[in-house]
Length: 142
Image 1 (tube, one colour):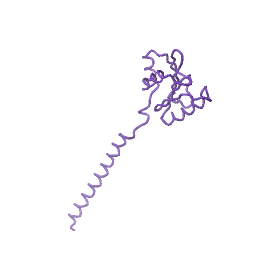
Image 2: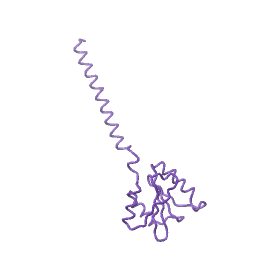
Image 3: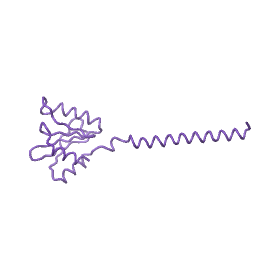
Image 4: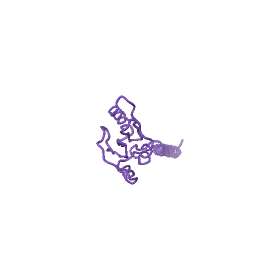
């Protein structure tokens, strides 16, 4: 093999390696965008959720946050019941927060409805949550 042939062969070997790495990186970035991503980008926020309730004419107050509700808390008052909505930093923090809310419930020996959606945990001041309240909360989580 001549020097010229060897140089030509080495050149194409390097080109193929660079292309392989480039294609691999492009696929990794594309798959991360489809299946991964930042959990916080999908989180509900207190400010936008509060605005939705207020636009619907509901009475909204800032509530004392439950331990672990790093994003704050709201209380939405209806005619004969209220909803407590706690915002955590992530889904996993919300799971821990839900457990804490259940453990600290006003009715500790009875089943209490506590719902988690992404980084939000909400409950009622009643043992069971009225369906209309659940629908209103779900509609305003943003």
